[in-house]
Length: 105
Image 1: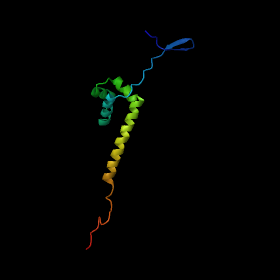
Image 2 (image 1 turned 135 degrees about the vertical axis):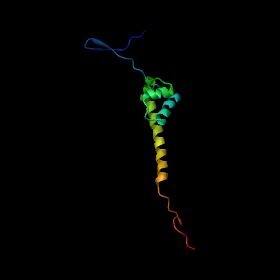
Image 3 (image 1 turned 30 degrees about the vertical axis):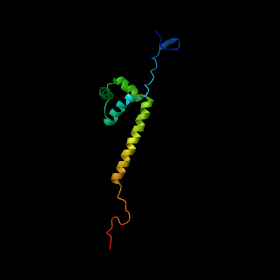
């Protein structure tokens, strides 16, 4: 059995927790991403229950830099599309030639 890393300070040894790496982003993590985007006000426990992960796995995945990068990219894409749709709805109609006026013959 491997010993845990030790930190020696003032002749006392402190056992350190082994550092766990973040999970690499995988396609199955998209289930978590879709769950967050579909219902953004969920707790991590609710996300875990809906996706089949444990709450600690969800926490580690959400904190991983790869997942955060993917989330930001998807969120920016969705936000840009929503803003474009909003601009289409709220922009005034274009005034082309003979539009908006009665043609006289």
